[in-house]
Image (cartoon, rainbow, N blue to C red; front, top):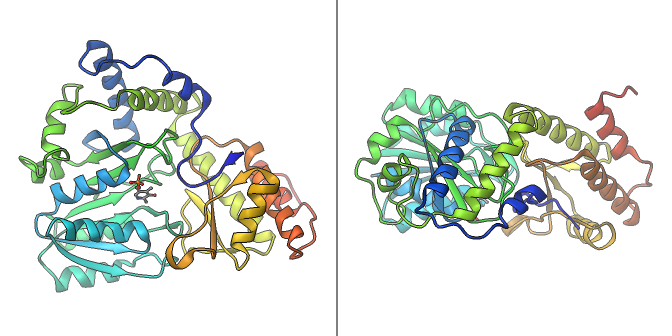
Length: 370
Ligand SMILES: *Cc1c(COP(=O)(O)O)cnc(C)c1O
């Protein structure tokens, strides 16, 4: 079965092998050497002033960022389930919460954010997804961050890059916390969260907030290549293997370029079948199709063609399907997925099979002429 859900993503064989060794003790020079190497790779990936690893799912990084960087009122951008979650975290911690809510296909505009910041000067942090996985859209995070800092240079920008770090370059000039999670673009099992931090963020963190998610304790320890509590040793070993694999495969910029071509070719192929791309500004992390037969297509993909793609949640349940584009994906896997979608449409009596999906994918990916 091909796993093509936008998280969890498949773990490459060499990474699984690297994680199959005996459990290592975390307070040893051997593990500290692995931690140090992993950190060095992460600085290149995040391009932020500091990078912290925390043993938790991605939501742990979201909570850590909110409690440590927001001391008054959080403005959260809700164009989907993950954006909504930031508001719930703020409320759970008794912080002020203001939300900009849009339909799941619609990214927030710079103007909407500017208006909220001007009307509510108590807002001291903004939380936004780079790629909102609920509908697969890309927010204009860099523009929004720049506009917010122009209004209030002290404001903290929390960017959830859980389906963006490792997918596409992100300009971190105005970003104070950039979040990632192991089971999405980083091709690992779930359980490791990562935070890239700016120097301004570190200053605001001060002594830190919370206990397990207190970022001040982690910054102090991780600068010495250790962790405040037991490190996720096996996942860290896996992460080092992933980052070394990306490097030996041509480096992160080559992966970004390949992912962009694959995402573009996939969108082109699916549109050639007459399918509708759901988000107004699609992210490169996944391709989301809105279709009245979304459930039937997913079922056929799984039962007839061995392909597992994700559906929608909440009001989009049964209305969309999402195909992963993150990680090291082979063209021979991608063409099979697109071919399977075309076969499913034929089986549903929607459109006679003529090989268009693969033809368009190959044309865009390999530059083959008409
Ligand atoms: C998956 C995901 C998360 C975190 O989810 P966990 O289940 O806690 O790992 C957060 N934000 C986005 C955009 C995601 O895709």
